[in-house]
Length: 249
Image (cartoon, rainbow, N blue to C red; front, side):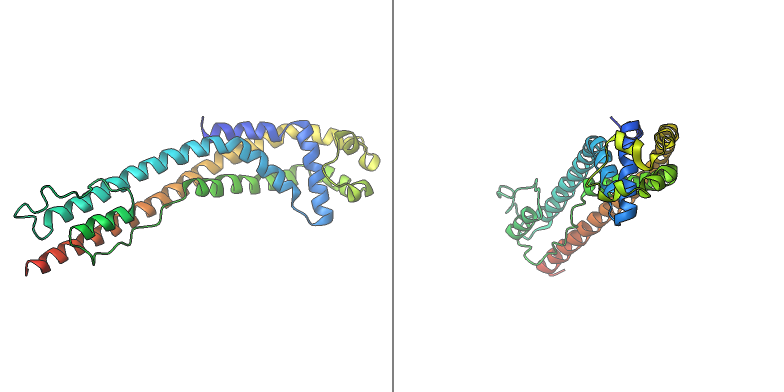
């Protein structure tokens, strides 16, 4: 299951005739009332398709980041155990110091137990991978889909907006009402004729958005990794300085 494949399936969902009719009604209502119902409807359908693969992708990335966190935490505490005052005479050989530390609090306790009470603990804030994917994928695709729909269905939207029926409509109009709006039979014809092109444009929009999404996520993940590495480097430098001070170095 990939984000691209599900994005294409979402394009198929959004370009069905009945969905397009409701989308035209929502666009017309938004045009008259200044609301945002079309965007909300598009986002909801995109989320339904994209959430499963994004959840999977986020879980894999967060698991990889967690493994790195654990490795760096273990490395930092292992270094502290090796250079701690008393390490040379075997004082810490059987000490109950937990080396596999999962959180900053675990690191703090381990280092304090080893005598490093003044070491820095400025570990980077975890990255919300799923939130990032939802922002760069769903929100951007929603904006693109809304722009495409506004252009593709401009004539039927104008016909619908000109009708008093749309003004009093409380929600998306039934297909029959959409066909009857303004007394123009070509409204339904226009919508049906445009659905296929709308789908093709949506699929192209998905294909164009994927590389940008990958670059954005990669950039954010690398920023998180660099921040994490720098934080541990500062901690380890501080540990070494404390150890040298303790032995009079």
